[in-house]
Image 1 (spheres, helix red, strand yellow):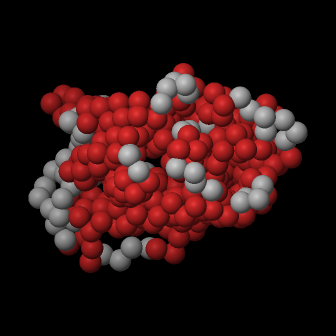
Image 2 (cartoon, helix red, strand yellow):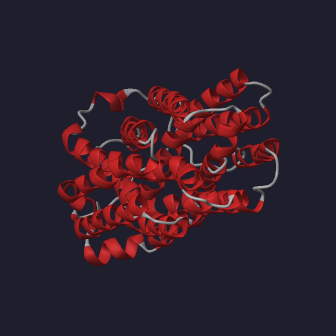
Length: 404
């Protein structure tokens, strides 16, 4: 078994460095994404974007992110996920200064398009790296990677609060972060690229059930991170420098639960943890929808973060396990898992469409109505939760495979 404790010293060190590098990539993605979404009110004011126009731009970004994930699935069979991840980080580094310093709306839209593609590539390749490492460690570590994303988002929200008075071009400095991280020592596939894994049947039906759960999570998550600051800005008399409070405590609560996620799931099981979280999420969104003042809405967003925290990491872990192929050559198995994770990542964007676009369209007149959509739909986790049970209850193989 090639876990850090059992691997030879010469391999354990590179594995730990790859884990740190992947965590840094997750954190970078969270930092950049939250830094941009918390400044959406500023972008909206600068380019005179109505909620409907902004919904259209977000739709474009989500569709292009989905296209980036599809590209990642196609390329994964020929290039390993480390190369893909570096490419995606490079696209983020290019797009952020364009968005921040755009001289006109057309350039801003072009920057948003490049960012969308890069987001999709990074989304897919970071999770490819994470499930490869989890397979090598032979124990759950996905929550910690998603916790790193949350930590990056917390830093981004904190920076937004601290720099709310700075002009938008100051955001261009964020490009330095993905540039630095793309040089990190990500995990490489042990053997050469291969196409053979694609020939093995993948059990898409159980993966679909888990994917529907992830759709519901990203619906809530994207609605909060995209429209939460705008709701505080447009619905309440919130001080302009405090609109990031829709996101900052949400991420803090989510990060805390993700750090405790392995223990919670190990003790109580995935099904009850997910079901309790769904009920908490729906109740907290009700607080947001009916909040009389902005501090009450912030409380609702905070509790919401705790309720939905572990859905995404449990989804990717389950999808990687359900991909099967444990009896394949390690490189073939990882090529197979990479392809499954890239395709599974499309559920992310289905949820983002519901969260970013549907919330904005329904909430064009009032974002209270917009947030009523995820308030109801998140309860779909209740019947879907059972599909996650094998992820924690199934016995683990005695041997571990290789990595991407």
